[in-house]
Every structure is written in C-alpha cells, then in structure tokens.
Image 1 (cartoon, rainbow, N blue to C red):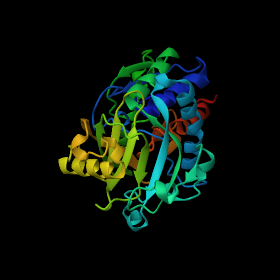
Image 2: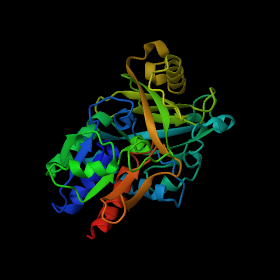
Image 3: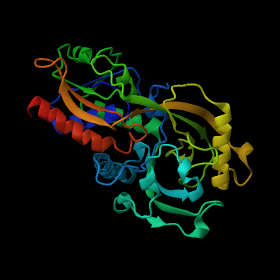
Length: 355
C-alpha cells in the first residue's frame, strides 16, 4: 500500500477488514497524519460530504457507497472527528457562470440525485437566503476534523495488524520490496494522488493540481455553507465548514486549476475572510472581518485527473511483474468518495490475487 492519505488509509482499512488476516498489509508513505505539507492534501482538506458527481456515473456510486460509513461514524463514533452539520447551498444565478470547477451543477439543482441519500433535503425559503442570493437548498451532511479522523483510521488500521512505515517510493515496482516482512509483496495498491504524475512506472501526465487556499479560524458559524460563484470571478469560492471536536472553522477558498504554487496569497486570504463574513455575519457576531480569530492559513494541491479517478488493476512490467491496483485522482472529493472507492479497490485486489 503506497500512501497514508485518506484514500490510502481507507483502502488499507477496508482490505484489512475484508481479508480477516488473509492479507498481510504494509502502508508505505512519505507523509503521515499530523504532517503538514502542500503535497499531503488530506490533512489540509475541509472536509465534508458534498456530492457533485453526476447521476448514473461511477463517481456517484462511490459517493453513495461512502455516505453510510460516514453517517455511522457521526452517529456512533464521536472519537472519529466526524459530526453531523446542516449544510446550506446559496445560489446567485447571475454568478453561477463564475463557479470555479464548472463541475458542481448537481449541487445547485433543486432535485439532485443525493436528495434520497442525505437526510432532510429541502429547498430554502426566500427568507432563509442571505442578501444577493436568489435560491438555495439544505440537507444534513457531515463535517470532518481531518486531524482527528486521519489518526482515527490510522489507529483502526494498526488495531487490525496493518504495518505503517515511512518511505519514499521512486518507482511503483520498488514499493513491492518495501513490505515489512522483508519479502516481496504480491501486490501494490497505488494511492499516491498527485505524486502519480511523477511516480516511475505510472507517470500519469493526465494528473494536474487544483490549488486550494483556506483560512482556519476559531469562530463558530453555527452552520456549514457554500455559494455558487463569487464576484471575484472564476477560480474563487466561498465556503464555510465547522470541524468537529474543536477543530476550528475552515473558510475557503479557491479552485485554481493547474496552479502548483505552495505559498499563501495574503490578498486571497483577505477576500476569503471578507466573503465568509458577508455570507455568515454570525461568524463574528456581526462585528466584521477584524473579529475573526485566525489559527493559520493553508495551501493544498487537490490531486485531479483529466478522466476522473483511476480505479483499475494492471501488472507492472507485463507477465510476471508485480500486480498493482490504482486508486488515485480524486481531486477535491477524496473524503466523500473514500469508502466507495475503497470498496472497488478491495474487489480489484481480490481479482488480481485470484481470491
């Protein structure tokens, strides 16, 4: 297993559960939960469950298959850092064309496919909308304290006998030689995200970054929301997520396709905070941006792929080579599709090993 982000750890956990000691799993990763680096996007995510996948697609199925697991964690495992929050989507028709990814149409619909998956979906009354917004919807979602959650699934993996160690993999076939047993692994699961762009034996040039920048604050918004587009135009966003268990509130953001810059843009941070306070004055009790209590500013690179997530198996080097199952390219939707994608990866591992 290559990577200890949300995709790698969830896949390792589901493999360990499915294998019931049949699989001897080692996770090899450059970064671990608790590390902060622009390459380690999982620790920098919001994160929440906000389906933007189109109906009838594999991506929609991955999202649908993930919701029950997140719902169970929010109901029964507060130690996971997952909690329920009411989500509000605010739409301004005049600014919809500025929506950065051009891929959130489903979220803006009055009847999205996930209305029967997430609880309490409804259309907002006009009196529930902030000024300048003309429509919206609401439903019960979850928000995830990523610092807690990554450690939680990490510990779940350890409890099931998964070995986790640090390492840098230059070529996908080298990962097979890094198994904790000292023996050659029969199969490698590649969950390296954006690193698959340069990883030897993979070198997927359809991978590209989508830069995100957020501000983490101590203020309590009392809700979770996002808007369709901003006045600043394409590439900038407005969203607010309150993480569970004292994890602070994430203010975002941006969706800068192809931008590899790892440095904080101070002017963008100011625009992010201004938009958040305008949409949700309760953040500062109506006192304005100067009353935001900033913890830190974050920059992360979402690992996007031209054709969407790569979930398939191949034999590296042809017949006789090591089997590899790929699970990468989740862009900004890694958490909300994590269990659904892991379900497919577990099946592919079984097929490759003849289980």
